[in-house]
Image 1: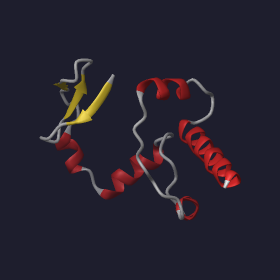
Image 2: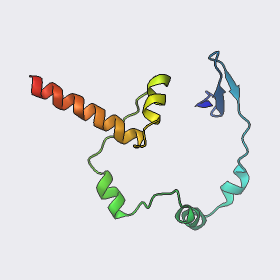
Image 3: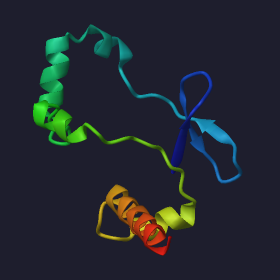
Image 4: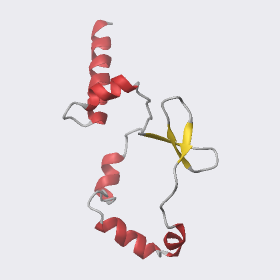
Length: 105
């Protein structure tokens, strides 16, 4: 399934024919609005999928630029089969290309 933001701020499922179908939100926005900053921080820290955003994280992130690249579905599927992280794999391919280009000039 592919999802995309809609102009009204909701999320829609992108259908094969290019149309979108609204997706019903199951988020309890009222409960979330009542959370304190301390509760939000505690929830984030307890989430095993949440990276630590400490000084070490920010030091490592410094100097990197975030760029969004849209891949064609067949390319993404082929790269996704590898056991290597997709972002690492794309970086390695681009770095190899740039190094080869430099060597040729």
